[in-house]
Image (cartoon, rainbow, N blue to C red):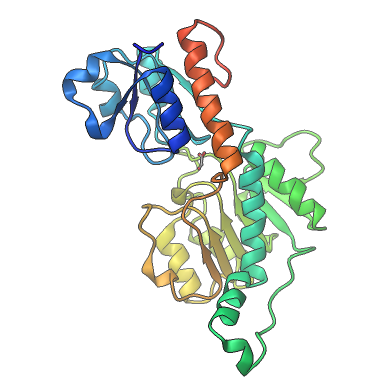
Length: 307
Ligand SMILES: O=CC(=O)O
């Protein structure tokens, strides 16, 4: 397959880049000339750059978009469908990591793990004890989106003795978790609200001022989905004004820009979109990207087809 042109619009996990280079004719955005466009039959995107309409239009021979992510929000799926371009992503292999991190963020915010760490490292322990924090076990956890990742978070939260409820487009059968068709009811009945759904037009700003206010001054908001799930300026003012108890955020509306107002807040833990960034999972995701490409070019069924 060395002659098949694969386009990578942004640097990615080096293992994936090297493996693609070994098997295909890899064109990286940074050493790509427009005249190469006609050789490109596949595109490998990620959470930052996928395939928007302009990119798709510029690649007339594009047959498949294989993204190194589970999220599809950076891919124009309508355009891909119109052009008959196949799309694959990397579900399942990253579920545990993202769910682990959601629980880790909740623990970090409530138990003030990062603040306590700074307290010790800054030598403040010698001057007195750290303040009391808030218990996590047993807290009412509400999950927005009970897909693969949401379900894995629910399982973990349940193991901590947390009553779990959720909101999604429709009620899932036999989960044993309480379903709220109205997100405001979910927020009002949760102490920790976790965003774990896909970003679509319907879920853009699904957490708005009303939801934040329903969660309230003792509530904690965790986001392991996408930044635009939350109305960020509303979140920032709620945290500054004390209308929300705390937040653990792995994703932001305009990454890597994070609102500076959050930097000084002790009840907020900020991560640089690292939900699935473990060595093990990145490798599994890379294998999936490659196997999907190989399956496509060998006319075999795709492993994780979206379209
Ligand atoms: O955010 C991570 C992903 O979509 O894989």
